[in-house]
Image (cartoon, rainbow, N blue to C red; front, side, top):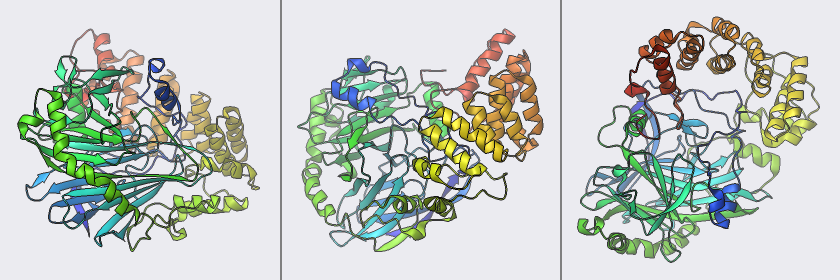
Length: 635
């Protein structure tokens, strides 16, 4: 096992946004036809929907300036495979190289470029991402994990990563194991629920693979649940769908998901093979039964997204093959109190006769591929039992440090977790230790009101209500915790009480957002430095949406020149110009170029405002390619 820096062109991730996300969780994955589905699917889709990502804060401070940066990586290698893992970025399996052929088995993104696709905004494409918690890209995908060496059951070193998932209070554990003469990388995964309550459980391993016109995805299924941005789940046949063979990713025009329906007698696996029948296969023990294919689609919007996620994209981009706990990603399962779930995954190269892999007869193709994988499939249960002998082994050598939130929560609750995933008190930083006085009923207000409060520990609501100190910070946090718990009226009362103690931008901002009173934004921005982008961007957008031109101009006047040049501010100004009838001015700003780093999947204000300007001007200039992020086709 080698610790080394991975140097590549990378954007800055930036700081967390200290303003709590109080608008509710925005999710594109809504199912309109739930009543048409099976009773079990109806129950699982209706259960466990995440309403907020609190206590985590949004990661929306990233940019699009690529410079050479060093990312810490950990490498496992034997005679057959070389695996590169990024412990500071959610444990991403960044690369898996088959040494004899020289093939990269994954889609290895040549850059690190965050984009707004994660539950906390920041997400990046490529490799294998581990998603725990709830529908979407997990809250830890761009955050560090604890890492350590553990002695494997065969004496080879095993790499263990673990972290505390804060929205569900679950422990995620990943054990990367590459036995000495193995042509498979094994990844043992475990979710621990240390609490006394049943918790919604969600897991998908998202595997990015390079695609070409000849790439085919094989899976032991004859049906799949199709999900598009039209918000319907429909059962379709495999492989024929809508006049094409759906198992060829590049034959799809639009972004689409296919959740494969694996018969209970089939062992779970999925593979992506090239024209010669070579590629990556992923298999697992039975608990991880879900399998999925995702494509961006070959229309202009889908291609634009691929270029956005990998600036300077070469080749045909990537598709994702995925493996999950449930049938679809719209479902959550019930993980009982004080219960652990575990499974073993295998990743390796597979070679199938191309006549079999690309056979027109689907049964021939999938059965033939399954036969080639049979030795791996047949040995997984035994390998899992070997892994279980060390699943609780204490780390032998610490390699990277994650967050201190797990240690803090264990101090609060007294819950027990495996000795194999320790959350030592010394992992707490000043940030986590700032909350320790709350356990004793104390929380002092800071000397300065210009520094925003840290993210509220919404799970500590009862402790916050019991704090004896009576100051603006206590009431601020009480308000956020009440809002999270659904007590909107009580939250407003708390923030108003916070204002009586000390008027701060932070309580004013929450009142402005939650009571739809943009004028409070005007008072808030006057209390912070003019270079605080998150508040100015939010405030200006609210004023423009409310069509309060006077307030918008006031907010803009208080902003620094640097903030005025920020893409979010420029976008709000475009809308303001359109609202006030200056379509030519709006078009001019758009022509100058607005590179909105946080453009969101499924929404596209850049194209919308462009088309608005064209209508007002009576012209028909097409939406520039740089503004085409549509998920429904060419827009």
